Image (cartoon, rainbow, N blue to C red; front, side, top):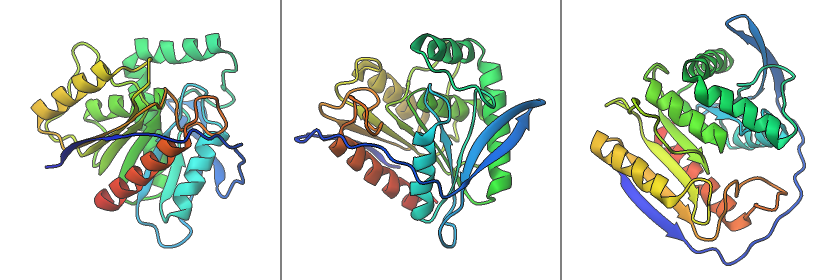
Length: 248
């Protein structure tokens, strides 16, 4: 059972502009009769498996589209879900807080939308599945893991995501392997949160790996943003590729 904590020192902070050339397609679907719009990209060759991508608090944008296309180039089918609803892409910080806040307060609705989106992703690709998410999407990834209702999942990965476990929740005994990519300079999700999660996973017997990147703030993988840290982004992506290779 793999339990490893690695720390990397970042010496170079370089940002570059984000450009997206879509290789997949928008996919309309419904959950409990409500419309949603995801994005699917098939592997460029024989598929190695399916990766479900959960977006950050912006909603499904070009960022997740880019990540899905990157995964397709690596040989994976990728499905970026939509947890807010079609055409619901909050633009202001206040609107984003409201959108995520309503789901944090109503965990049952969050789970229904995640499970409905997962069902749609499995219609897009029937391969073994790894779930991953960014920021809010990382928190949602762990919510799905704790639900115990996702069926057979090969692994979960969170990039600079929320790590807190709500009161009354816990991880099932059969939780699959987990990769946590975290910024050492993240003031939104602290190292105390990382420690608390690892204590829970250790006690649960869950196989996990934590990567902590020195100097990396919250949202360090977001291309073109002031928070972007190229070394942390590239190293976390390499760790994720290794995780996929080991579990799919």
